[in-house]
Image (cartoon, rainbow, N blue to C red; front, side, top):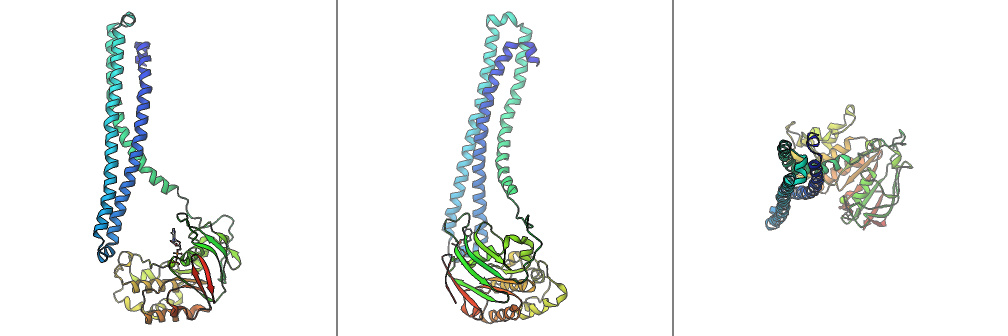
Length: 400
Ligand SMILES: Nc1ncnc2c1ncn2[C@@H]1O[C@H](COP(=O)(O)OP(=O)(O)O)[C@@H](O)[C@H]1O
Ligand SMILES: [Mg+2]
């Protein structure tokens, strides 16, 4: 405003320059943001490569994959360096460019001021005051351009976080779902077709089978044939399948996820344990403490022998236990829950035959009250099943 009072013509010129500056700042901004995004991505690549190398170190060592890991790390590192250099280049060009334009503007103003027409209107005093004001404005503009760089990098970084925050939560209690609870555990898959969002082929291409209450049904087949996918759909981990999955004659969407999962005891293909004692891991989630089942189950599948020192932690992801021990803890956890449905996804793959037989007996003992879905490789484990379905390429190719 002071500038307007001093001289409107000079100010008009100044206003003319401002949009140009703005446009350049904008341009540079979007550049910054884009390259910052790419830098974030390549940083994520580095983190990923590092983490994978750390977690998979045994496999890397066992398979002598050092050279490959080094190459992979080199690649993500190079990409990060390229992106960082590009950003520096943009910064190196845009800041001086802004200063150049601002400088040109100031020169223009001085020139105009000196030319006769203007001199007629502008007194030297006004002029000096005016230049002073503009020069005062220069350094904030300069700083603005610098700050912008950081702001844009921040925005780019935040985008990923916001994407994650915007991810819709699972609807644990679905609108329209009644209070109903699956009780009998009658499972029915009808022509279920499912495709993972990241996969092009159908993981399930029209699968139909049934597990009646109290029945034990086994799914066998090559790895990648869709067995685990069927289990995941039953547990409501994925939505958007075609066909129908019914429990007690009602589509699973009718149940709230909470009620549904409360009735399903599930042992995942990879036994997942949490850092804590074995007992904490076995009693994870809700279960009926009064039943006295805990000790029985621990004994039955010989988890009790593992609990010699009670409070010892199993380590991150249970890495202080052997694969077979982890699986037994995971199985004990599932057996302890009183769901009407038991789903075991290759849950005994790391057990010796003797322990497997114990687990099998423990399951059979409870099977009268449960519908059991066994996914297995070894036929011995599923010998008692009422029905066996053979999966291949997302389809059931044989049943009997
Ligand atoms: N989370 C996932 N995202 C994309 N594709 C998947 C995912 N899980 C499994 N698949 C694909 O779905 C198919 C079936 O996998 P899965 O059900 O795990 O087989 P199985 O348990 O019989 O070994 C495979 O081709 C696999 O690559
Ligand atoms: Mg599987």
